[in-house]
Amino acid sequence: MRIGSSIFALAIGFGGVFSQPLAAREAAPMVAVGSQYDTTHVYVAPADVGAFADSFLATFGGQSTRQGVATVTPTPSSTSTQLLQTPVGTVSLFGFRTPIPHPFGAERTGYLVTDLDVAVKAARAAGADVIVQIFPDPIGRDAVIQWPGGVNMQLYWHTTPPNYAPLQTVPENRVYVSPDRVDAFVKSFVTFSHGKVVSDEAKAPGAEIGRAGDTYRRVRIESTFGKLVVLVSDGHLPYPYGHETTGYEVSSLSDTLAKARAHGAKVLVEPFTSEGRASSIVQFPGGYVAEIHAASH
Image (cartoon, rainbow, N blue to C red; front, top):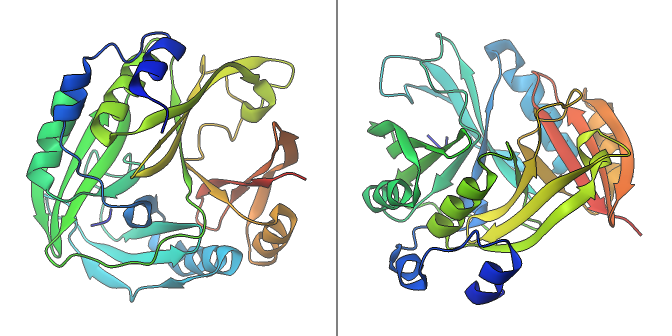
């Protein structure tokens, strides 16, 4: 189931989030493989699988693996499963024919790791809870972890290592976290991922989360796993903000939205511009909500 600034500068510049000794960070094993192996997990009803796949691929390009039916959870279940590979990000698509065992369906992404046992140990040491212990699937092994702030992710390993081409643009994992837990989340995830904070904006434009005229804190992180943006919110979010788990970077937002509309997707948030980025939020057939953005000119 598929399901660089210096450390010293980060510690000074971002409020002491990285108070962990450098030696401790260096001791954490590097387990990331690459952003092309990180997948957004999308769950839709079986009847919507085909429509979602067709719409998503028509919007972004790419192709799907052959659909299979398998048990991809540690307890009995059955789902269709396929991988949608596009130039701007990868989706693991599931259409469960049985009820979905808890806590599956709440994990936003699957991250390929070099060694699952080492990765789970490293995640736990960095502050994550292991909410689904390691289990086998038809093509490898998996576990589900939860970061401070309630962010669920799956870690996976394949018996036969996959070999995918690099992405044209790296998607953005969009994480909404409360002010109470954001520093703990950032510290834990950066430690685990060997990533870096590339920006920490205390007063980002509130329009980015549907709150025009307001401000919010936004933290951007990059690592070998890819890009991650932390949106720090009081939870007073207008729909559909908070439902989008991934942001896809495209060369032309208008062209991409035209393709999306022509293939059954709904534009939930019309394009707007903030800090050099034009953005929109779209809902694909089956209910999957995604942010799409492009550099504004």
